[in-house]
Image 1 (cartoon, helix red, strand yellow):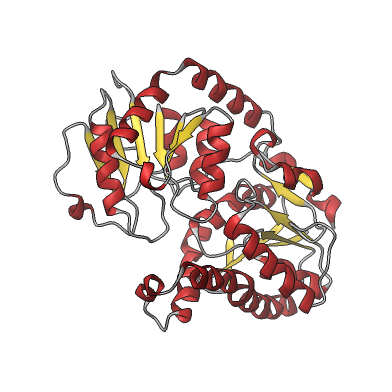
Image 2 (cartoon, helix red, strand yellow):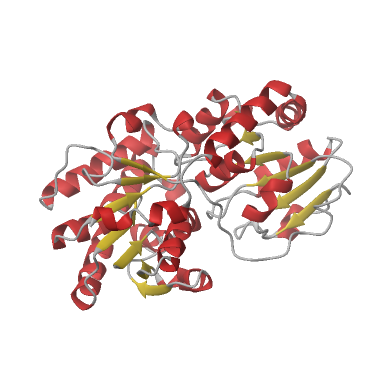
Length: 381
C-alpha cells in the first residue's frame, strides 16, 4: 500500500506523525512524507522519503508582513488573530493543495495521512477522491483563537465543496495521540478516533553529562522551538529554579542566543538542544511553555509539569494539565520568579501529584502502539 503522510513544516506538527509513518514503512508499506524542504533532513533521518510541498509557517507569516515579522507588534490583537486565521485557513492550505495535486498526479497514494493542523492535506486528498485520515499532534484545542481558526478553515472547506458532519476532521478517521482522560470532551463526543500511544520523537543525540546518577532532583526547562521573544521569560524562570535544591537543565531553543542569558548559577546548565524524548524519563519536573510535544511527552514519561503558556494551544494544554492534577500553570502576570519557585517546589514534593502522574502514564502505556495502529491502516482504504 502506498501512503503519503503530510504535515506543516514545524517540529511540533511533524514529529508526532513520524512514529506511525516509520511503523507503516516497517510493515512493508511504501511511505512518502510531504512537507516543506526545510524539514526534509529531519524526515530523512527517520529513514523516510521526503517530497517537497507547502511552505514553512515562518514564510507564510513573512508574506503577510512584507518580510518583516516585527510588524506583528504594530497591529491590534483582533488584526493579529485575523492574520493567524488567514495563514492557517487559506495561505498554508492553498499552497499544500496546489503542491499535493501535482504529487498525486505522479504517484497516486492509497491513503493520505494528514496532520490536523494541515487541512490542505485533507482538502487535496478529498478533492482527488483519495481516502484520508487525520492525525492529531496533541490535545485538540477549543475556544479562543483555536475556534477562530477552525471556523475559517470550515468556511474555506465549504467554498471548495468539502463538507462533513464532524467539525474536527470532516468525517475522516482521526489518529488521536492524546489520552482520553485529558482530551477535549467536545472532540471525544464526535470524532471517529483511532487511538495511538504518543511516542516521543527527537533526532538522535547524547544526553548531557550528569543526567544519570544524580543525588538530587533534575528540573528541565524549555520554551520550545517556535521563534518568539523568550529570553526574558527564560531568565526569570532560571532565577526561580536555581533557588531550588535541584539541578536545572535548560534547553534554550533555536531562537535564543545562549550568551544573551549571561552568567547562570552553578546548578544550572544551558544547552541549545537536547534529545527531549530520551531526556524526559530522567527528569523530576518539566517547566515549559505548554507545547503539545512536551505536554504529551511528560504524560508518557510520568513527569509533573509546570506550564507557562505563551500562545496558540498552550493555554488549553496548561488547563488540561492542571485539571488532571498532574501539574500546575502560571499565566500572564502571574508568572513571577517567586511564583515559579513556589509552584516548582510543591510539584517536586506533592504526593497527590505523583499519584496522578503515575496513573496518567499508565493510561498512556495502555494505548495501542504505532505498530498496532499501522497494522490497521489497510482497513481504512
